[in-house]
Image (tube, rainbow, N blue to C red):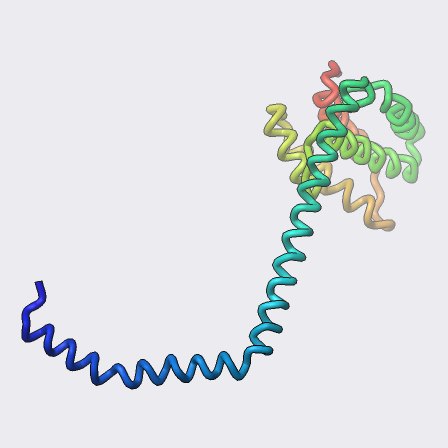
Length: 192
């Protein structure tokens, strides 16, 4: 409990401060009244930015949900990602390019293997902002042990696709395509 001397001292001090406290709030009140249109404009702008952010966020969420829902319907109809026949023709072209040994065709084969793998990741529900995130989700879900090799192959293939000067020799192309083949077989649940 507060002693009477301390209480009276506090009350006296508060009475001294009260005019300055009252003056502060009165000044703040008049500043708000005089600048009300400015405050409205700032709050309108902030509300607009927040609303735009919420709309963009929910659009991304809805797109992801729609994509996932469509995948499940496609799987039910037999059109989904677990249909290896769908990719067989494209993979045969990769094999033909490897057999030719031509540098340009080897480059195209590696890039095509990357695209097939990326499509399979999407269709299998391993979604993400980048292919690296998709790979990590895939490796975690499927207990895929060769994630480091896959990430290296992805990095090299990405550079290969984005740089016209970069080429690939036969040995490196076979190595990269072998890594993609293992990952694709894991997704499709096919024995190598």
